[in-house]
Image (spheres, rainbow, N blue to C red):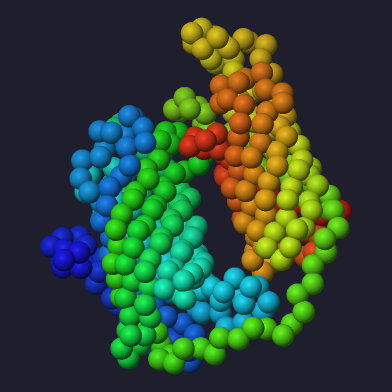
Length: 376
């Protein structure tokens, strides 16, 4: 019944046709290149936008629905990390979501993703990060009610948990499960209340090679250094304060930490960092002079210092990083004493890496950070 509902919407039919032609193009390309380890998935979903803030309650007027079109490449154990993580898939996803609200607009997205498998490969967990495009973001004159999205382009994340069966008949299979999508511009510009969509999805998959690849453990030796290492990194970007119209200002985050490799999976971190934000530097005198009820003094220091602990999970040269910190020096104090960070790192060499991360205060994003680092 969920699949039939696709054809009851003219907008979804149009998008479905574009996705269908994309599948045909990709199928012919894959067969031409003989990429036997690839498979493609198409999913339809419907669900609800979670009312996490009263400021977007007026925008939740109907149930959103949409499509995922995903291209996946299977791993077969050529590298040690593949067998260690039970032969995951990696690939990319194209996305469309109809919010059924003209003020909120619709969403298009492109993601890179990883699929992890459990319970004899019947349960698939997907984590995806990418970029989304909002068709009708906030505009002071024409769309002042859309407080969810302050920009047309924004980072986006989605998670999916599916019962997945592949190659049931001539390469065809199916999947069904839960999906969660987060759309937020990470305070690149205000407003940025964001939306979280929780839905049920169902779809079909097609494996270009009808024979399951030869799953094997690699014979390569997987060595890693367990000595404590010291890391210095610099992160920067732009953001805007919660007062709409202030404009984007740069920030600079400098941190240093010790890293202890525990095993093949990851390492523990312990360190400290300095936060310098031009947005805070400008908003403090604005609040002090114009909003006396905020109890912000004109002499409030905009600089902050934090200490944090974290965990880094390694997947080949890519790693996923999560950190929890506390401010030990913060005269501003508006955001509370705790902060969090979730990010991706790419190890260019054994000593040099690049990173992209999101710094938040619970569900409130502060900054999308782009950084470089060096391991001593």
